[in-house]
Amino acid sequence: MTEVLLVACVGVAFEVFFTALTEPKVREGWRLKGQSYVWMFPIYALVVPSFKVLDPRFGAWPWAARAPLYVAILYAFEYATGWLLRRGTGRCPWDYGDARWAVHGLVRLDYLPAWLLAVTLFEALCRRLGVI
Image (tube, rainbow, N blue to C red; front, side, top):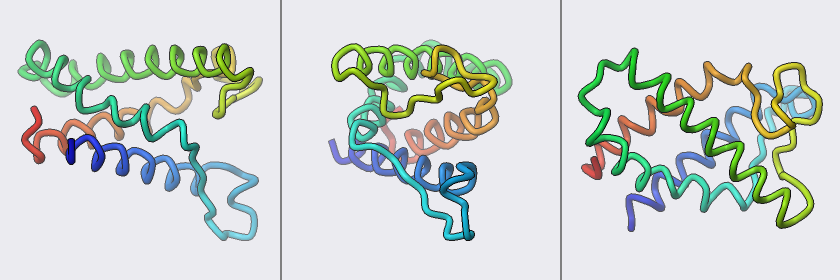
């Protein structure tokens, strides 16, 4: 359970850092003010159980094959959780609106490099913690 909480905290911290560097309205004045949503904590908490399921099947694959697969799964999960939140609450907290590479406002394909980095870090963290 401690590992799940730690990974969730790392996920939220990664998101705050990412938004501080990429959001124009947040970057104003170079305050580097990042943000996240309370909804993200339980979502990032699902990283550990997800890797426990994925690693036995794909953990031996080379990183160049494994990472894109993990990102595709992550995009599907981000889309599904965003859709569920929109359906349940009337809004998706990370609504990307009509951004050029957004899919229904729920995922952004131009975030692929950040998600590749994220899945690599999450996998390494899960290995380091001994959960996979």
